[in-house]
Image 1 (cartoon, rainbow, N blue to C red):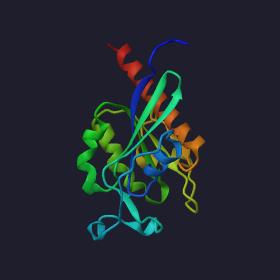
Image 2 (cartoon, rainbow, N blue to C red):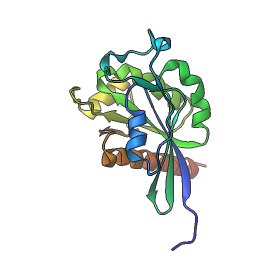
Image 3 (spheres, one colour):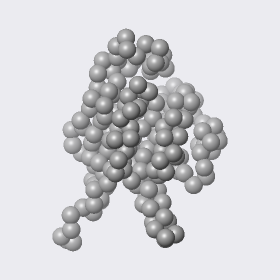
Image 4 (cartoon, rainbow, N blue to C red):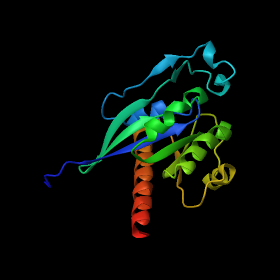
Length: 190
């Protein structure tokens, strides 16, 4: 035993409306996740498009929070962002202190991913793209998704089913490794 306290890092889970952010946090968190789900109301009419997620009756209005211990020395604190544009004013605050982010994408509506990708690129926060495999949605080669989203080669893209704990863990391991590699590369250039 090392006697050291584990390193705690903050990871952001972002993406469009109904893409699986709350589901990912809930599938992997070792604590009961904190969610701020509210029933969809008339406020979202014309803003939120529930047609591709017809079973969605609630939405995150502030954030989701969970925790997962990846290793005896590494604990991830997960912060899921709200997906609707009217709540994006909170993203800067949620991202403060984060080492990396996951942008979840739904191939039925890839355009919903551009805002999150632009947000993290503008802030130079390392991110990966998790292509959530929704039942009944077309499955595309990840390189085709990379091209459609104009993602640089060095940014990992992984297929996932955020309902499955092992798949959610793979997404989090990938973003953590990517963020730490980017940080190490940045320090080496100094």
